[in-house]
Image (cartoon, rainbow, N blue to C red; front, top):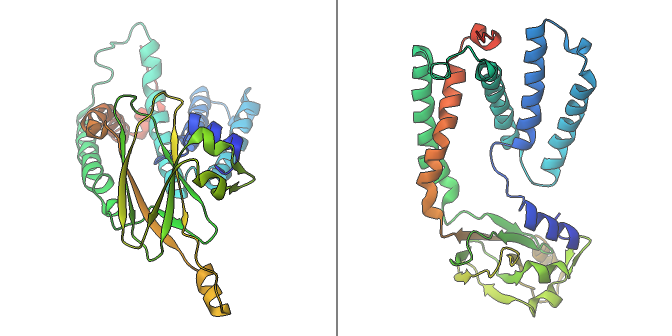
Length: 307
């Protein structure tokens, strides 16, 4: 997807395609479908007889397209989609319960959000579990080990890592570890330059190698460097590939070369990495919402009282 001049420019500038769990590409439209059905159920009409049925069908078709496209393009995986659907149920029920109360002039805007005893227990449980997952699984879990590769390279592969612009005054510190058994090459280059040499799924490595900073890593070797950007449009990427092997003399040697797989781990340290605590604090309302909904009874979910 990145190996094309237009898409390389568009996606690195607008969406670096490093979306994570849960998938809001699926969560948002699925949430809208659920709200539609809750609304129809409240009105006592069937979805098939709803006057906005065409809009509902349009959303369904788009969801099917999204499910295929985001996995085909590598934006999300199935493990991102399932939690996205779960998030859609949580937020839809919360909105269906709270939104009419917010619009009501006769409803107390102080007490409507306060949880009952069951919801309070649920909120505490969700907060505890989420905190544990964030700090012991997501941040320092097994997948974060320096010995685990986050890129694998075949013989003709050229992989790409986007260095995002977080600050114009603080550099991004990058560490690359060759955790595999094959030698690899890395190329640090400006995105604007790489765009000119990417077409139809192929990077012109020979043309690019003289226009950026080239690194070679033997097995188990590592390197570190810093990247400073001068403007928000001055982005960089890291291209990686297997180091060109010597020509093979026998058929068996050629087969071994074709089956070679390089494994590297690229770690980017942004200046705001320590802001994890502020990110955690900002997440607290979401813990509250999840616990609030999980603590609701079915009757509470389906009944709306605005006065």
